[in-house]
Amino acid sequence: MAVPTVRDVDPLALERQVCFALVTTNRAVLAVYRPLLEPLGLTHPQYLVMLALWDHRKAADADQFPLSVKQIAAALQIDSATLSPMLKRLEAQGLITRAKNPADERTTDVMLTQRGIALRERALEIPPAVVERLGVELAELENLHRVLNRINAAAVAAGALQS
Image 1 (cartoon, one colour):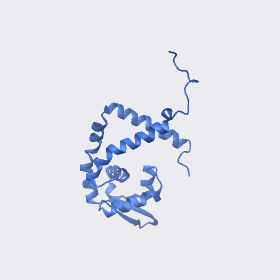
Image 2: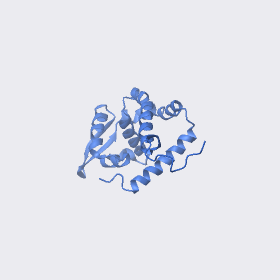
Image 3: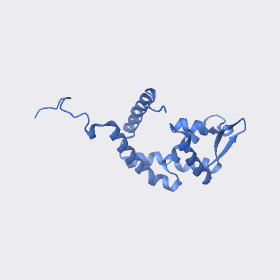
Image 4: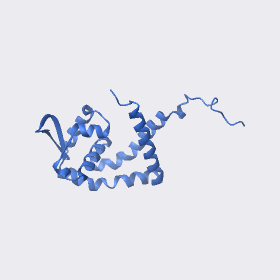
């Protein structure tokens, strides 16, 4: 049997599309996260917001410096309008507070509450549980993470997220 050449392979075959692999993998991986996040009372998008806030808090004197909605949106590569309803729900759960920045009324600042800070301890169980459930070696996942970050950076550099 002959080995297929590039010309023999259909470039439009669904199973060859990177976009399809990314979409289906995203859906499957989020399904792994869902039952792990449920006991924390978080959806995956809310978890990402909390991760951004926990990362910021690790910075020096971050307790004194809130993150703006715009900064969180930039970190998550989403627009502020998408972020606002998530923040509203996190605030209703008592995990964050939102307040107008006194120096610039157009800016809304977001800070973790003590409850939001404490939730981080429980969230520490999420990453190893995901690795275990996926059944993939950590080194392989770390390599995938590097490749995905390179692809994301290339897409952003090509103007993929410009409006």
